[in-house]
Length: 320
Image (cartoon, rainbow, N blue to C red):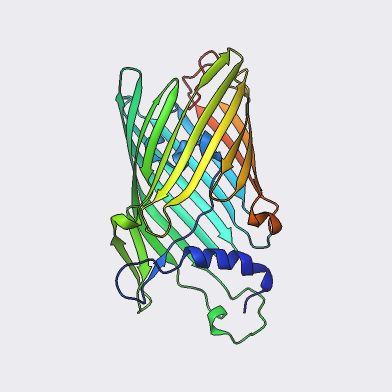
């Protein structure tokens, strides 16, 4: 048995990796179970590859998230992204990498992104494609154990390398945005021989929809409402995540708002400071008001965005 302090985290990820594959009864679906971001409001590339190039600059974002603080072995997630339009103003490229550790497991995701922009009358419509791989491995040999002969924890788990592709569409203008994406086209399962098998099934898709707008009360006070829906086509899951968000923008300098995540019963507080047109820093804190309140002190996330060669001035800031 592994050390007791890791049990809540390990149980959660075992649930996320439960049997959901098609085919033989001993096939087991594989899911890396990445924790939910809260700062997608300020980096849409986290949820939609078609967001690439929408900032009219070379946009670089670094974020760090501590999930379920107060639980030993809880997930720690770092994310790095980079995206920009090319000179012809229609094609954009991007790169996204995520690094997570929970308990004895480490996971890495690296994806390249391509997007094509169409200029419409009042905005742009973008089509995005991402391709890369998710990688995960677990080393149980360093855990403290009551049974030193338990074979499950005497060896390192065979690493997973799971190539995948995803797609998205994104419309944006000065006053509103809307988009949807399918993060992964391929699913994976373990066969009865212990090997990893890729397969495609429309019934395994997750579809992420997001939309929002900008309401101007005065030149110094604006309000940005938005919503995110993560809908699973799996018969047992359906609505995976529903976020209702609202951010007040004060003097185009301070962004302050709240989100209500119904699926987790979490209230998210968000604060963002636009230091100048190129540099932004942000903080968020997820406070659980449901069952997790008894186990966790919540989750926190920190983000920095810097935009090289930005065409956006202080007199014409970008809100999406």
